[in-house]
Amino acid sequence: MNTLHIPEKKIPVIDTFDTVVLGGGTAGAFAGIAAARRGSRTLIIEQFGALGGSATTGLVLPLMLLHIKNYDGHCPLSAELVERLRTVGGTEEDANSFDPVMVQITLEDMAADSNCDILYYTTLVDAVLEDRTITHVIVNNKNGLAAYKAKCFIDCTGDADLIKLVGASYQSGNHNRVNQPVSLRFDMAGIDFERFHAYMRSLGNDQYKYFAMNTPGMKDIIRKAYENGVLTEQDACYFQAFGIPGRPDGMNFNCPELTTKENVVDAEFMTQKQLEGKKAIMRLRKFLRDYIPGFENAYITSIAQLVGFRESRRIEAEYMLTIEDVLTYRKFPDGIAASHYPIDVHGVDDVSLGLKYQHDVPVDEQYWEVPFRVMIPKTLDNVLTAGRCAGMDFRAQSAARIQPTCRSMGEAAGIAAAMAVKNEAVRFNEIDGTAVRREIRLPDKF
Image: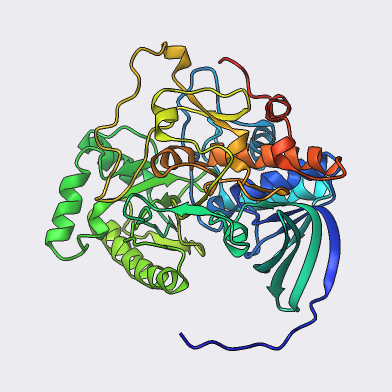
């Protein structure tokens, strides 16, 4: 590979914060708000022009259910977000569906109310590491290169970008290093739901504003479209759609599911998936208009700016959540999130086949917890990593990657950051994880 030597540059240090959060997505927005509310001067640095990440720029909705009796899965900030969304018509009564636009706006309001600073359209490019401590992050935007200093940093990039940049260890992919398949989601409007529901009922599907490849009759319809050349084999491999709160004629589509490889965050691969994904969306548009009554005049309203990653990099943490922890419903003194969401590996190389949960656990204890320690990189003192890139093995991550769990991890990271900045020397492995658990109000039993 040819190399280019760039002469030494002087990079201005723009400001100093207590906490800098890299990435304002599902985990990052909650981390920044939680830290700021506890007196930590906090900055969220985000590559797009909105908070919420997968939920907003990625159009990933609704929230997946945690399947725990007497527990809705909402950490305190998540519960507040739900209540705020209700006032603007941005969620349904079940609190799992949401309008991505209203989530963007509401998270920004929560950040402003918390005195949390935000810097949009800015990308992390490097960091300064001294021994086990990061002192500065270097970013790039239209103003050029700039540095920000902080006492501690929270990597919420989803892809462990900060961890990779400083050379800390991480894992990626399954036993063959292949990541889960990616998707490109989109929204449609102009749907005649009266005709659509009548047709769905004729197939034996009584669900409201929902259909998928496994709902009655849909496999046959999708197969027919494939045989007629309307859909490709890849288009037909996964299909799912949901209603959107506040949009009486709209639906959100959890498809097309695209292919995968080793290192899905490669820029050329991401570009290819955006290009392929848009072509697939146009094929799905034709399929819906031609084969599904009620969609004759439906039109595309938005396509996600963010390719939907299920899994990419995962840090080597103080504790690695394992598939055994999930299958045996393990609890932890420093647990900061609880779930009974199933193993959810997409693609043909499904390594979850044959796995069995421990059958003798009482029904009311059939959930597992995510410990605070999965967010602490082994070789760094003043960094936490929250969200889908926390320390988990491939199969455990497939169950823990959903938004409710990532929201809880983000809030827990922000709580821990505020605790840490009160100390003269920030070392997250010295933070009492049980104290974080109490702050995030995770019950000992449900």
